[in-house]
Figure 1 (cartoon, rainbow, N blue to C red):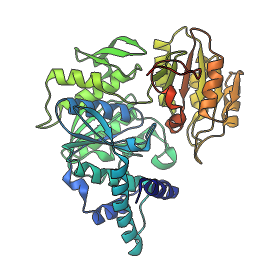
Figure 2: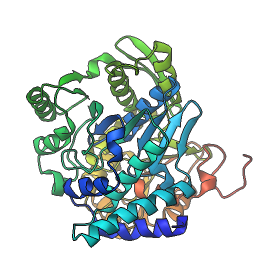
Figure 3: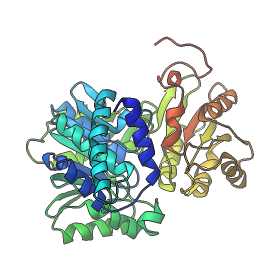
Figure 4: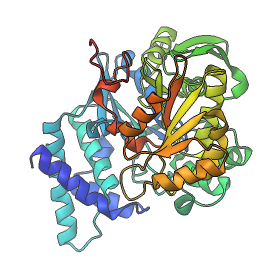
Length: 440
């Protein structure tokens, strides 16, 4: 296949949607020679913070000289972000020629399954298998693997050689698939815990922590908990934060007050990795400093300041509100929001609306995108009358920028799915958002 043909194949495979279960995945990997069995993994599940925690872990491993594979879902700006590796030279997304090659290989295996009368895999299962093929080809020493949905029945949960299972904070999300209670969702996420393995977690919800503790005990796994009382944020602004974890001082350039917690979870995970993945303190410090994860309270423009944040559920909205109150107190805010229709968007708006002077609503791409007019009505019912819908995220951004005064800030949030629509000229972190050319 060419790259164009490969992307078309993936788009068409995506029409099958999400279907929990591991049988299809195991069948597909069997036809591909079980590449996952040649790799070692750090498996990351949870509701919020998975991407940031994975980015910190990957960065720490890379700066200490290891070749690290990483599977990212969902992507933020470019499809090739989903399969990447990181080394001393930074992050390297898969190139298009190689992507086409592994799509061709995976497609041949899917065809064999179809010919044998087997149930064909979903697009996420195909992409996960593609990632395993790429990581073996690159000779990755370790893979930081994010679960897609849940844990126990997630396509990523076919791996055997797991160095650590990491569970980020759990909250209500994807209830239609994972269950209607925190306990149900925690049980699904805790499905990544391995017999006699290592588990690292940080939880706010006591019910979630109780489930994780019980599952770890049942599997005789060693559980390590990150306590919020061990984390102190010393300074924080739009350029990042300085914090201490267990009295050690760290500096992250990833903005957002919640990033100290994400970094601490990554640090604790690295403390408990086996040889040869042991680190000097200087490597931990450098790994936290160098970590990058796009789309999480990220400033993409200076004049006016435009921040994008992937908050897409109530827990994410609360974390975003805490960061706004901590870093942007007294600033006039203009919101641009788009959200998926299966999210608790009314709760999100109720949490965030009081912080904004006005808002623009958009419809994210795809069938799951909530209509912009429905979302606008929610904002009005929650007390924000200065809200208008826009046809695209760029049009919404322009409307928000037009309302800005000299000290105002635009915040784009609600879903990662529409960030890729943002104009490339906007995503430089410097210059203005008024359509003028800027020096690179």
